[in-house]
Length: 235
Image (cartoon, rainbow, N blue to C red; front, side, top):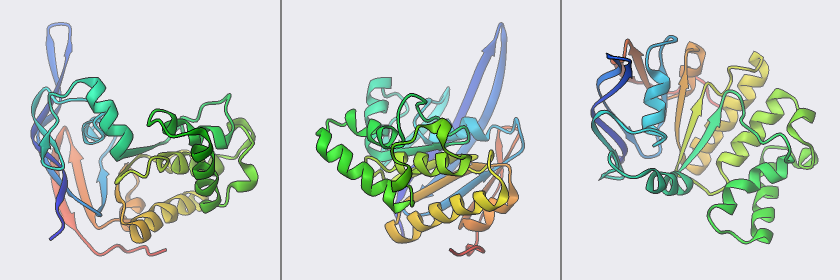
């Protein structure tokens, strides 16, 4: 049985609007197994993005516990969480979030700086990562010189810069046409199958769920369904 890499235990996230408490997550419990492919689905306003922030250690719960590798990280400082994120978790976003003044190569190298990797090693690793996504010929182009699909491939390469165990992707195909979106999902599936990465995709698109083994449905801040399946789309 695969070990649990991320666990949420009765997690609440409550925002304050003046004197009003606004619960965005209400008592959510969830386990993510090491090496699994999980899709978190829900409509706009369901709380799925907030759930992603907690899973990715980008935020902390108002109540409840978040565990990573069996360790309670709910009350860790931002500095400690940032260090863990840099080592364990890679992020892919709908808006790509590439730095516009840097080339594709420099964008992929950036996360390695914060881990203290020497420049020659950073450059060599970034080149290999871009080549693995057929982007070596575009490595010296800046984001505004790349298509949406190319930018997202650079973003995935960047998410792998520090060889994290976990990739968290927030609507990774949201700004792409269906054909390009399939290329991106095939790339994530390949990482899951070949490198045994734990993949967590947050989306409102039901076709994305066909790539995953565990589908979590969230609505009104609560998990309403959590089921497992054989992935229907194979790369």
